[in-house]
Length: 90
Length: 419
Image (tube, rainbow over all chains, first blue to last red; front, side):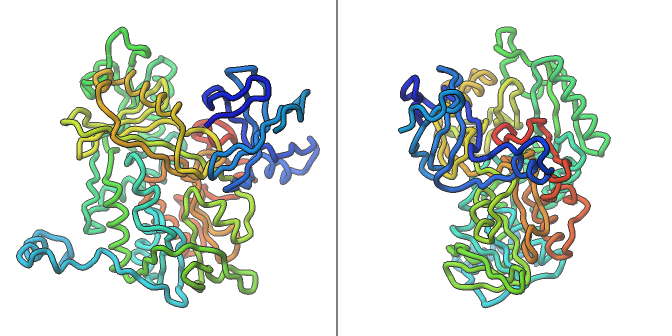
């Protein structure tokens, strides 16, 4: 599998570290325990399109939001997150 | 008389081996059963066997999307052990190990269970302390464990690189002598035949496409071979758990599907007579009865349903094997493959009634499901038959994630790819 980093270009998967499901939203600190339980433990785990975080740990160290098909490993889009969120989307 | 015995072998040899009964019938689905098990893997078949044998429930169907032996039960590194730290885990796996010890006789099928010992290596003093802690926890629970020093490790696995030049010199290890390996195909076929002989229908090429509800209760399954009604439906589908449960309207579970690769080398003369795991990286290796080195390592580490892995893991695993056994450097790899594993959020399994009325869930085996096969089937059968967990699987409930009672053996947190 290869991921195209918006900053560094196409690189092998070994340069990246997985950060998990990117659809999970962190609840407010005073949210009820059920909301936190859901955010921490409950996952859709779809077969098909999956939004997920990766960090280009052995490259520019940027965090990325990747849309990838979990059945085929085909990558639909890669975008930066954080201060430069949205840049580099394909 | 047992169906497989020296007498039956001789009698069938005399008649040209033309009269053996098939190990299981190609059953067609009936309209209704007491229990339908979704998933004809090791755990599903074992559940059907123990439902019949322990609880007298024989009006049971096992529905399988593919064929018996085609999933994880025939695609693993065959290691059986109970060397866990947490009491909830080691009591359960020890019961499973005890079932393994009598399994060939119970099933009248040679599962080739070989108690050749599983040795976890340690490379630092801290690691020796951790092994001692786990070994003590096991021994306090009546499970065998021995802490080996460097010389004892050298004697137990003579082929290990014990030189001073080793990248991670071995200090010692934790040995469970009663642990070992089993023939995975035989486990699938043995449980399938035993269940079949109890009257269980094993229905292959039958994919579940939906669930039937009646009065707010799961009342059966819709399949590619028609609707099958059931009082109770048990789901044991490993890496497909989330997708199957979604068909029942359960859209989120503490499960992620990941791929684990495994490797077999060309056959060699006997070279490794135990199971050895590396402590300075994740690798486990043994030698099969056919002579191939069987080994595996870490997950690829991202959500996938693709049953194939990436080359960096192949390289990593090969380099770890070389670090342990430099003499295997010339051995050629015969084949490698990837299997889907149902990684739970705390690395421990789920065997529970629910999450819906009439539905029962068996999942979260991570990459340790094979050793659990008899224990998992035994506990799942109990839970389905009595509508309550056995003491051994009471902790493996879904609500542990709500109660903060997770069983995190590795202390890795809710990151399934780190368990």
